[in-house]
Image (cartoon, rainbow, N blue to C red; front, side, top):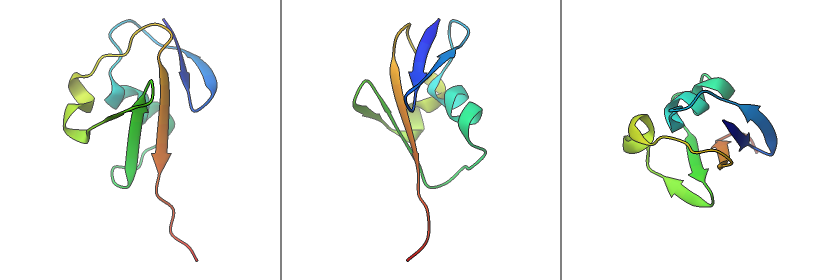
Length: 66
């Protein structure tokens, strides 16, 4: 299945979850927010939210600094 993660094309297996997509991009476990097709996905549902072909996923991580 083809999805776009942060603007880049990725091939992922059918049934890939939001949690698995996040793990592909970052090892961070805090300070991460996810939207699928412009809809925020709450952290509590990452493991049960399956991606579909052609979904657009944005994964944002918080960065400290001044």
